[in-house]
Image (cartoon, rainbow, N blue to C red; front, top):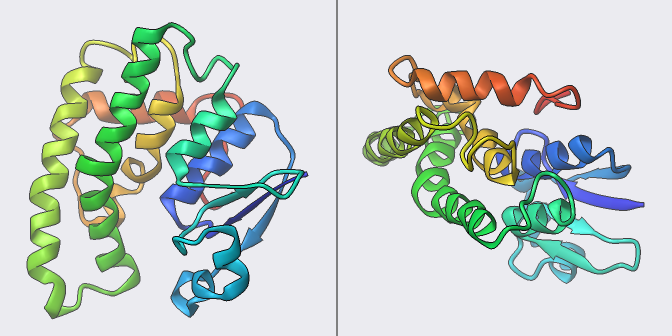
Length: 200
């Protein structure tokens, strides 16, 4: 059976959990507490030398890390990862966008607010995360006004990658009321019959 090392509250770990549920793949969840330094233990670093979650351990003991890379592995050959080269590249385009233009701001603002309680020393960084996070939501809004999902008509791993932290953006102080297409997309993603919530 597959093993997932992660934290249920982490958006990056949630991506993997959601993909596994959508595909109906059985797995064992092994909780890892990053705040207690468990990702820096010798045993964990043997699975991911970068010391981060999530990690997906395959049946043969091989370990995969980086959430979006894991999504590509789990999505391969399914409806969630297009085989047509242009569409597949657009999926990658949104995954790179998520890692460079979305997650560093939306997820970090959430961490500062939810996990750290908005300490004075990080308020300036928090404000900058909001400026850049809203810019990312504006980019998503433009696409989602044109198509129901980020890559056209089909729900894909691009949507999973960006849903993970967008659907809890309020926990980082973001207000999505000015982004109706994004809010409609969040509802579409959550309406999938095999959808599972972050804390379910």
